[in-house]
Image 1 (cartoon, rainbow, N blue to C red):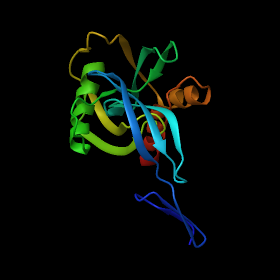
Image 2 (image 1 turned 120 degrees about the horizontal axis):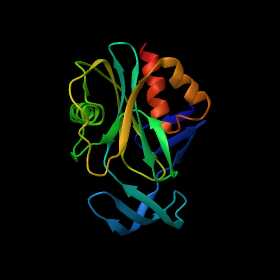
Image 3 (image 1 turned 120 degrees about the vertical axis):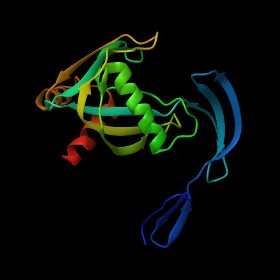
Length: 199
């Protein structure tokens, strides 16, 4: 038998079983506010040795929406991303305010974010995938949704810290941007691939 026993931190190679989970032995909060819990941690490894520091953070779970209008075009936004220091093209997205999150809660957040960022709504939603945003550093999940037949019902209603433009674009242009490295965010590229699988 060869493979991973999911959920229990065990790995089997041949007839030999390896325990792979780390044990948290020390944690210090470096930042803890309404936006982020940034932590410094020491862990005991499977061989009994203790190593650190490791740095991880907790932030809100998020949603990404691949939204297609009634003409078959896709709604994208442009906004500045301070991590890379430039404006990017991406899909509508945002944080989930609730602490307890499931698909129903995430869907409501997705509907809200789409409306706020673009003024569009849809009655044709589909959950596509849930993925860990950055398993080495962060503990939040990204919920990816598809929305078809989106229609404009209002103007944007952005938060005070949001400055973004939205526009519609065809399938070919998104593919071109991805191939050229101009659609830069990994989770948004992943969202596109999951959308394409549903076609």
